[in-house]
Amino acid sequence: MQVRLLYHTPDPERAVYIAARLCYSKHDIKDIERESLYKSPKDLIERLKRSGHLSVFEHAVFTFSLEGVSRVMTHQLVRHRIASYSQRSQRYVDETGFNYVVPPSVRENPEAEKIFREIMKKSEEAYRRLCSLGIDKEDARYLIPQGIETKIIVTMNARELLHFFTLRCCMRAQWEIRETAKRMLSLAKRVAPLIFKDAGPSCVRGECSEGEFSCGKAGEVRREFSLL
Ligand SMILES: Cc1cc2nc3c(=O)[nH]c(=O)nc-3n(C[C@H](O)[C@H](O)[C@H](O)COP(=O)(O)OP(=O)(O)OC[C@H]3O[C@@H](n4cnc5c(N)ncnc54)[C@H](O)[C@@H]3O)c2cc1C
Image 1: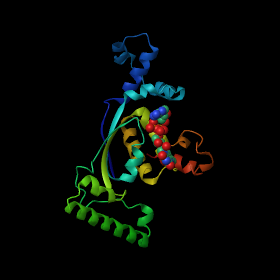
Image 2 (image 1 turned 60 degrees about the horizontal axis):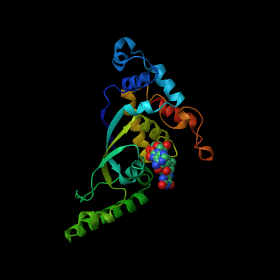
Image 3 (image 1 turned 45 degrees about the horizontal axis):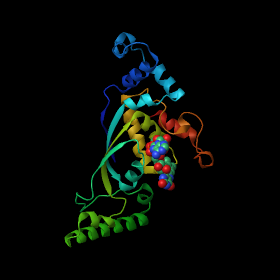
Image 4 (image 1 turned 180 degrees about the vertical axis):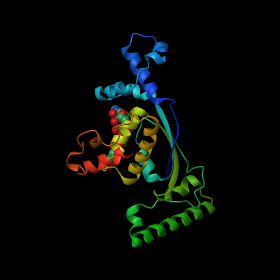
């Protein structure tokens, strides 16, 4: 999979800081913007998160491109509603010769991988035959497996990203969306380290929220995210 951060609000932490300062200051916005009043945003950003004043994080926006991911993954991704998406269309784009994602569990089992690849090959041949019989791509695609590779562009604001990372970086999330979310977090951290400092599953910030479904590996997960 290839995950790239295409664009983001020029100075995400400054955008959050100015929006928050405005709420609690008698100064004009242009004065708050002035360097002399622009102090380190660290304390303020931490306080905002602790107090749940999260709407100010909506002013920082991030756009990612995801390629070489499966439709299994993107089907889960697009359940996140506070976001914008553009995905390669199977109505307009010919999927002849499509690539697909092989899950690690299948890759590690030669017999399973053989079955998996046979079905993918047969599906691709069947798709091609339907198209050659004049069936529209939008109908021929019904027989394509969910493991087919796709490309998608996703835009989320920092508030939604924090929520998304909490759910999808958790060990309980499905492996492909977890890997995608981890790569997105790593890229977001580079441009907004204060905003995304403690981002990730709930156990990174404190107790695991999964109760009886907990993976029981909080220490391991904390280490994993401290290295991102
Ligand atoms: C481990 C895991 C397993 C899952 N299993 C399943 C499953 O078996 N079946 C299934 O269908 N889904 C499943 N999901 C998807 C899940 O139910 C959510 O649809 C998905 O995670 C999107 O999250 P969300 O609704 O919190 O947030 P988003 O859509 O990202 O929205 C962010 C937040 O905005 C608020 N919000 C958004 N829309 C509304 C609204 N209409 N009304 C009120 N508040 C709103 C909520 O506070 C929400 O948390 C699973 C998710 C995970 C992480």
